Length: 328
Image 1 (cartoon, rainbow, N blue to C red):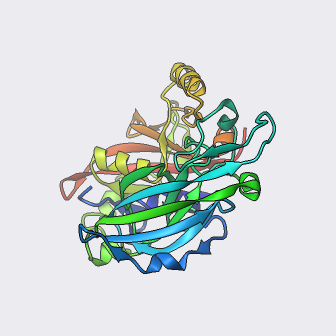
Image 2 (spheres, one colour; image 1 turned 90 degrees about the vertical axis):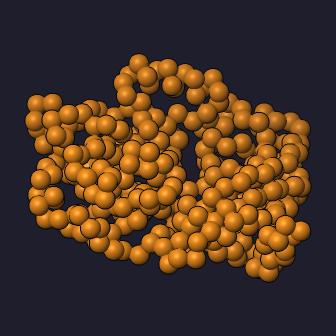
């Protein structure tokens, strides 16, 4: 995953605009694998509350299915699941394991795995919007209300590996209810986010005032400052979280504590710290990472963020240095 993927992972939660730099203006208000289309979901029913309802089934042998439902940014949905899946005896599990949409309780073996939702239960019902690298899978379980972050095609899946799917039996029945269709503006309906546009206030003078590289404490040049974000602190943190980024630990002591807690809770440890670097003569305000659990120690996308003194439309401009670790 190179720099282009870093941009796709962030753009799913922000508006990309055309400037000499890559600049995002966050909203004021807050395909990885082949998929099979489920055409029955394209004809919604209407429930007693007047809400559109889509119904579909996902077979145990699938990781993802294309629901055929196109959703818009800001749309509020409720997904509910029923049914049972069964995994055959395997390895240290001598008996069949049958479970519902909330999946199997996490075990020690789930710390190292290849699931779409790393900290989700094994075999639970999951979803994502879009089929590209930036599509961030999330848990559904028995039922979940959620707001669509960006327009795209809705996919429903099972949090399992290819090996699991090849031997699994049963199916989940899924109901997707449209609680609020959201806005019909071009921005809300644009697949992948709003179309490129200029951000008023991003001037040549502003760009010239921002150092092009960050540095270490001794002043040695480091990564390029390659992204600007206009938004409040809360909007910036929400955008990264929505796009699947995690805030990294600030120091080694935090690493030991967080790693131990995650291990005890049978979770993946993804927040390994990054070195402290400087812009505007001060350390980064935040560090974020995006990685696969098994590869986090040797390969991950990461970035550092600094809030600048510049203000556009009443909101600060954040300077981002994004890069990709490729090994030790």
